[in-house]
Length: 107
Image 1 (cartoon, rainbow, N blue to C red):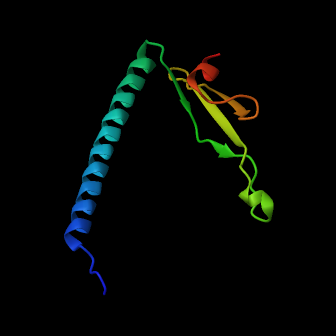
Image 2 (cartoon, rainbow, N blue to C red):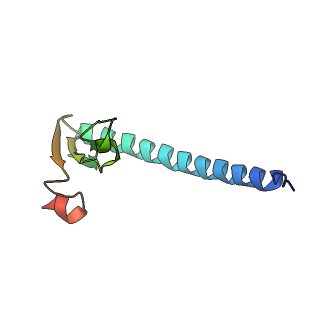
Image 3 (tube, rainbow, N blue to C red):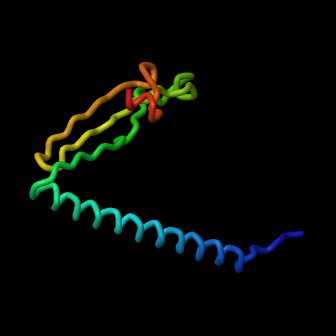
């Protein structure tokens, strides 16, 4: 016996996902507006620094053999930006050297 798709359940799930996406988008827009406001203040007379992790990168790109199924070594990129001068400092390290937890990054 075949079961038919529950179209109402799928429709409600899609509506929920769209609502969550809209909430996420509005929060992101508000954060960017706040950042632009702060950057304006930093350009005038205040000092402002911004720091964040950039994208984490897999170190090896091997697509054949047993190495493909092995665990990849990750490289981390931590950036510190001086918003007034526009200078940026980037620090790269692999997970073999240290992790990326808050206590590791702060030390």
